[in-house]
Image (cartoon, helix red, strand yellow):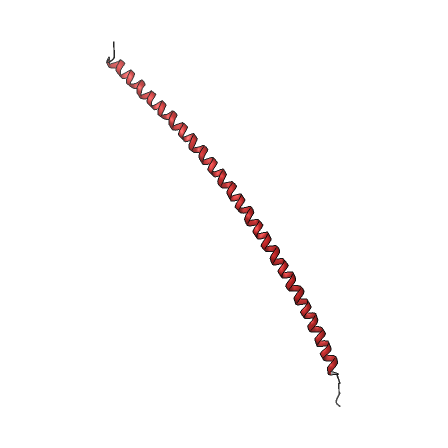
Length: 105
């Protein structure tokens, strides 16, 4: 008992050719989709890098402005402290001269 199955080779090759055409089209569509996704990703990354550079520049400007304000405040305080220090020393000298009786009459 044997079963014989007959296929026409032309039909089999036609089906294979049709499936290969479908696969080729699917791969072409996939390639196009991937290329578009990569292009979109490049654009997004470039925009994000540009935004980050801008933010870094703004933060650097703020840091520089804060540093300048602190330096100005310290310079001002140093000036006043020198003035107060000189005033205290002169007052002590004046008191010392008065106590010891040294002075111009």
